[in-house]
Length: 157
Image (cartoon, rainbow, N blue to C red; front, side, top):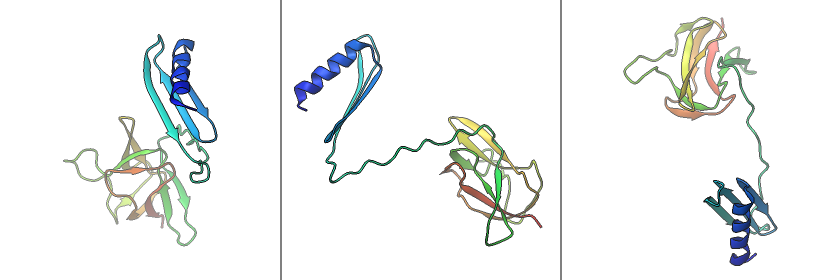
């Protein structure tokens, strides 16, 4: 595909009223995004050689409706792992000038706030679903976390 064909494709997509078109061929990938009304917003062209670059499968993250932490028992200890229920940024404090919600060695009960995870400018308080003592904090403050990533180890005894 030469530049003239790409330009014609862009014009065709702009006139068609489509907001996004993706085209993949053996050696080229093209994504065209328009704002409608013959106004072109974004054009991305990526050339690749199939023998060198392999495309990875697309995995969609599951949708989580609850902001409560999900406990899971680890196999090697009797500790309970509190995992992140959402993707976002992990914070140990409500604000920089406030104390941390929990510390290592602290006793917690069900409903206690363990941390806050910011997702899309919303701060979600993560509450404990178990009672016990914080054994280990597995994530540094102000770092990104993934869905189901271990955050805390809790000794339930």
